[in-house]
Every structure is written in structure tokens, then in C-alpha cells.
Image (cartoon, rainbow, N blue to C red; front, side, top):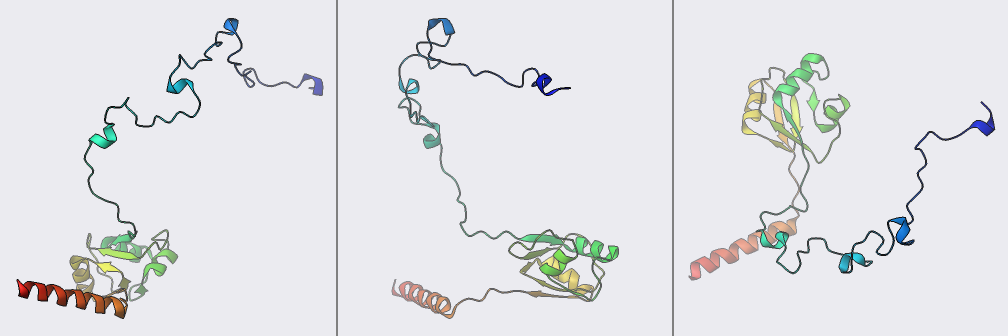
Length: 177
């Protein structure tokens, strides 16, 4: 092989179609844009436009909402914890929280916290620190001799005062009726 023999594979380079170059080209005159109207011009913004008819996205009812500060929790079942203990990833009697589970390779990342769910069986004694635990999971852990402590968000004193004030106003309004 020599430098003068180097060439692309067949079909690797395709010449672009030059539109609007006369009748003989097959894409002359309107240049493949059809005739007149909004789409023949530049800056077309049709989107959901239906020729003046009420568009489908406005005819259909709107339902639900998206919570703007929604938390993304890691969820783990007690059965998965028992499996991790059996495989030697966790030790019985160990303090377990999100970081311990990530370090053990049970969870991928910490996200916003941990929710403990009650599917499966557990016999290992574990001291868990979680953001939320189902009643069934809590009961099963305590039955196995472990403990579940729930991390509670600290509410500012101002927020507590506001809530008490609004509750008092509501009670006064009800009593006045």
C-alpha cells in the first residue's frame, strides 16, 4: 500500500444535494419546501398548532403535580440486609447507616437518605440509623434483637412558632362561628 493508493471506503463520502439550483436538479424552485405558507418560510414555530383549532394539549384536562423539592430515597428491605450479613458484607451487631451500606457495596450512592422496608426475614442483630422505617420492618428488627433509630429533620423554632400561631387562629375562627 502506498500513499497514492489510499482512499475512503465506498459510500463513506456522500456529496450533499444542492437545492434551489434550477429545474434540472430536481430540487429547484421551491427547494423541497412545497408551496408558500408558514412552513415554506424560515422561523417556523408550529409545535402543537392545529390550524386555529384548540390544540390537543389544551383540550385535555390537567392532572396532578410534580413536587419541586421531592426527596430521592434509597430503599432497602430487611431481607436484603440479612442476605448482606450472610454474605459477610455486614457484621451482626454492627451500626448500619447509609454510608456503611455504600461502603459495603449494597447501595450505589447515598442519595437523600434511607428508607427501611419490611419484606423478607431477618435474624441478625443490627443497629440501624435510617430516615424512615415501616412499622413491619421496625418490628422485625427489634424482634431479632436489633434497634432502629430514625433521623428526624430539625425544624426551626420560627417554623414551630408559625405553626402554633396558625393553629391558634384556626381554633379561634372555629370557636367564633
